[in-house]
Image (tube, rainbow, N blue to C red; front, side, top):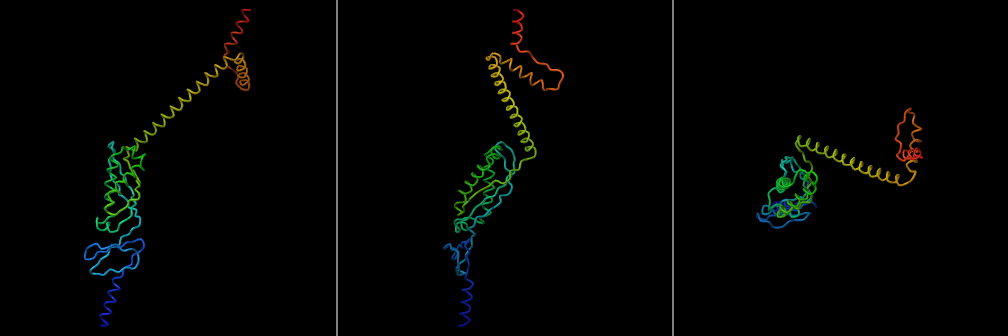
Length: 245
């Protein structure tokens, strides 16, 4: 009798399971899903019952480097990180085998497909839009598995060396183009201001004489021995009038 009691006590002790707050226990009875246990002290009546613990915390999974061909036929190596968590522990165990590996494989395929629908310039300049699209696709496909994808981030985009040189040349040409445009706009603005100043001087009697005197005053402070300046037409016309008289 004592031996029987001892065996029963040992059996009960071996049925005790502790489920932590970040875990859920999926219980099977004779191979059939029964229920999901919440955190705490739980009992699993083996050999008729078995339990698999599932971590429901957010996990970060690195998506390995993938060789992707963009829409404009440029090869690039891209890697990413995907953040997900289990929202239904039973589905994560029953519907898919090794859900973490399955999510990584699905993310790799989706990433190649999304990048293949975009030009290289779009991939480089619209990285967040590409990440959001990958997240949307992966989240919808993993929903039957009881998985919720929180975020997907493209980490690195590695281009071939010749493509890097081409992009650098393109950026340099763009900077030169902008410099030429800015210089041309400055010339146009300067010409407009000079034209306006010339009109103002021609409209005001004696303005050109005052300008000439101001210029001579500025030249007087120069240490050079020779000064060459143009005589305004108004001065020549005044002299011509005096000669006629």
